[in-house]
Every structure is written in structure tokens, then in C-alpha cells.
Amino acid sequence: MLLAMVFAISTAMAQDYENNNGVRTVFSNHGNNGGYGAFSLGYGRIDNSDAFIGGARGGFIFDHKLAIGVGGYGFVNNLDNNNYYLTPTNNELYLAGGYGGILIEPIVGGQMPVHVSFPVILGVGGVALTSDDWDWDWEDRYDRADYDSDVFFVFEPGVELEFNLARFFRLAAAMTYRFTSEVELTANGSTYVDPDALQGFNFSMVFKFGKF
Image 1 (cartoon, helix red, strand yellow):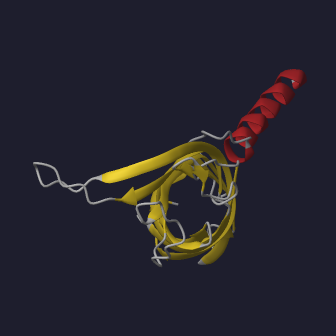
Image 2 (cartoon, one colour):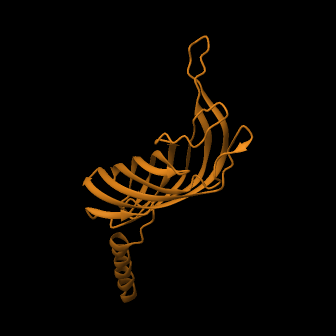
Image 3 (cartoon, rainbow, N blue to C red):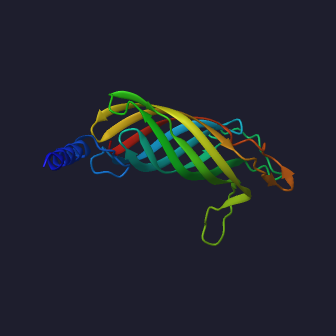
């Protein structure tokens, strides 16, 4: 009889502990999971020329501490109209492309009004050495000539200072550094672009919407 009472009390205590202090899994309903989508507008230097970098990303947020998802970015340089690439026909060349991949984003103090996160993008991209050529045909169409293109791998870690402006909206100031594999771009048989031209810092504003 005593053993039965001890067993019943132990079972009740175990169930109570599990309900209130049990181990929570990543996908547990008891966790504080969420998700977000975001777009960013940024500036950087690509091959020693001013560049615009725009992007979008999204992911699931686990317990306010870690976001996992995907992200993608597009870029174009020569915003300062620096004519440092010239073909024999005197056409101005510039770099345009994009990249994307897996997003891993640790978040520190996510429930605080101001906090930081450390997004990392790991993936692949493509870049083209291109020019706006006036090519009038019977349709009076404006054509763009692509001189060469290449594929690259990218690893881009960063840091963001985030502001919780509303329950569903966060604004972040971000700084990242883009590491890439070497690219080889030519025009008219000559190499025009530094192999490490795509590497460098990005500075951007990130607009996040979701359940945080």
C-alpha cells in the first residue's frame, strides 16, 4: 500500500514537472517561435566604384534567439559614372549581378527595444560585365550588350543594430562584408575586372515585418 502511494505521488510530480519545466524542442508549441520577411536598401563599393545593393530575405525565428531562412541580393555598380572601363567603341561598362543562399541569424536580446543580430549568408551568385549600347532596330528597341559573365561563391557575415518600432515591424542598420571566390570577366579578349572585385563592405537599412 505504501509503495503504491509513493508511486502515485512520484508519477504526479513527474507529470507536473514535465508540464511546467519540460524540455522544449525547436518546434514545440510552448516555444516563442515566429518568422519574418524583410527587404534592404544598401550601398557599397564594387570594383572601386559606387554600387547599389538591394535585397530580400526571410526566415523562421526560434525562441527569439535564432533565425534560419534564405536571402537574395542584387547589385549594380558605376553609379558615379566612372568611365574606367572602355572598349574600342568607347562604350561604358559596369558590373551587375546577384547572389543568394542560406540565412543563419543569431539574435542577442531580441525582446529588448534595441538589440543586435548577426546575419550570415552562404550561397552562390552570378555577375556580368555589361554595357548600355544604343542598338536601334526596326522596332526602335534599346538593347543591352553583355560582354562576359561568371559564377561565384559567397560568404557574407554581418552585424545589425535593430530597433523594435512595433510588434510586427523592426528597422535595422546593417554592416556586412562580402567574401567571394575570384571572378574572371573580359571584354574583347582583355581582362578588365579584378578577380576580387566583388569583395567589400555593404552598408544598408533593413525593414523587417513579421512575428518576432
